[in-house]
Structures are given as C-alpha cells and as structure tokens.
Image (cartoon, rainbow, N blue to C red; front, side, top):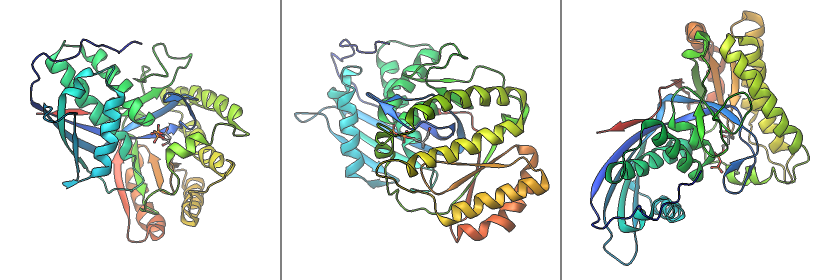
Length: 357
Ligand code: DP6
C-alpha cells in the first residue's frame, strides 16, 4: 500500500466545502492492543450504527498566513483542543495529501449523540474527516472508483483512530488480516463479504447509559498497556479464533454462538484492563448488575439478547429486530432503574456514511 504522492499539490489553490456524515460502530470482536503505526495486534469485527453519527463540514480556502490553520467547531462551539489535534493529524498526512498544507480549514462537526455517552465519537468523527479529505482529493485530482475511495478513506481514518477505519462502511466490517476472508488487511477495514443471516441483518443496539462522564483511562493508554501484558499472546490468538467462529454464526444465524462469543469478548476486553500493569477498572457496580439481569432474563425467557461493552461502563444490549418489543419492555421495567435519569439510546445496524450535498 503506497499512498504517498508528492504530486497531489495545487498550482492554483481552490476553495470549497465538503460535508460527510459517518456513523459510530460497535465492536463484537475487540481491537485492544496495537503496534506502530496504528496496526492492530489482532483483527476486530464491528457493525456500524444507524443513528449515532457525526456530521462534518470541511471548508477549505488558500492558506493566508505562513502555515495552514485549522479552526474547529464542535456542536456549534469553537474547540481549540480539537483544532490543534486535527492540525497535528493533517500534518501527519502531508506525504499522502500534500495539498493539506495549502489550505486554511474551517471544520464544523456535530454528533447526533451526547458527548461521553459511551458511543465512540472518535470512530464517527475521524471517519467523517477522512472521507472529507479523500473527497477533496477526488474532487480536484483524479476520480477514484468507489472501492478505491472507501479503502483509502478507511486507511486514513485508521491513522486518526483505529476503530474509525471500520466506520467508512455500513453493516458488518472486519479490520485486520484474517485467513478466512481474502482482501482483509491490517491497514484498512473491509466489509464482511459473506452473506449475513436475516437474524442479524437488522441487529438492534440499545445503549444503556450507566455513566456519561469522561473516560478515566483513554483507549490510547489502554492499548499501550497490552505491550508486555502477561496474557497478550493468548488474547491475540483468541481474538482470531473468536472472529472465525463469529463469522460462521453471522452466516448461519447461530444466535447461541453469537451470544457466547460476543459476551466473552466484552468480558475479555475488561479482563485485559483489570490485569494490566497498572490495572484499571471501567465497569461500575450497575454494569455488573445489568449484565447479571440480562443473563437471568435470557435464561428464563429464552429471548436471544446479549450485551457487549466498549471501553467504558455502558452496556450495549444486542438483539434481533424480531424480539424488539419484549426486549424494550424488559429495558423499561428491568434495566432502566440502573441507568438513573440518563436512560438509554436506541440504535441499530446502519448503512454507513453518506455525503451531504
Ligand atoms: C474498546 O479505536 O478508540 O472500542 O486507535 O487509539 O484511537 P485508538 O483506539 P480506539 O480503540 C477502540 C477500542 C475498543 C474496541 C474496538 O472498537 O474494537
């Protein structure tokens, strides 16, 4: 993969505006541990969400000062920290997109979900930004076909935040090289090529908000703790095996194995955190209470519902569309007491990013 291209420079620098809306995603097989630069230690599999997305509008015009500037507005308010972070990110891309140095940028980004709601805003935000940059290239330089376009956007999104590379596609996506699917790579994500069973085609994700504060340990720090982790080697092997088995379950409609693997992955992710040096704990008492109630509910009613967790205490409740009615009654009666006045967010599998005209 060689995206470095010194020719992507303007003789006459244009102005323009490009906007993309891109979803967050929830991983079933977790990416936890990475090598330089943004190479995952194990493959991961996620699905893109439908309603939780970031809409990013990038305005670009010829640079006025000595160097390129980035003004960033998050949900309507100027955000210097995001501006600085984006400027550093753009500078790191100057071999791939030399034209970024020729622009002053005004970027405004809006999330459809509350900040710190346990939904990865870096995944939706970085993928929207990567799509916009690739679209500036596509608009002013050569036209790429769609598959090249999305592959490059996924590559760029990965450099911003690993899990973001999976958000440039809708449906189920794999990031990381696996034997079972040709074309998979550590450098970008690819959509799952096998036919997904109807049970999972409209999979629901109800996010129970146990806590909405900022994370105590960043994902970046958490990934770093997988270096020299006593269980790292076994964990990375296990992720390969779980991914293989999950792909089979997704194709055959095997809900039992889907539930077993998904819950085990979530608990393993947190087990890795709890056995890092230094160790850390992101689950809350309510997280465990909810998990236990979900398992009791499933055992007594045989409703195919399970949980997964991100790097935080909030619960993603996953289930097929066919059982939505009974699951939502269960959420309201059985689980909402543990979410206080924060409540829950209803989401589901989505179709992926969209360009906004
Ligand atoms: C637990 O993608 O946020 O959500 O690459 O450092 O930006 P960086 O990390 P990030 O890590 C996500 C970890 C996870 C699991 C997953 O989404 O696969």
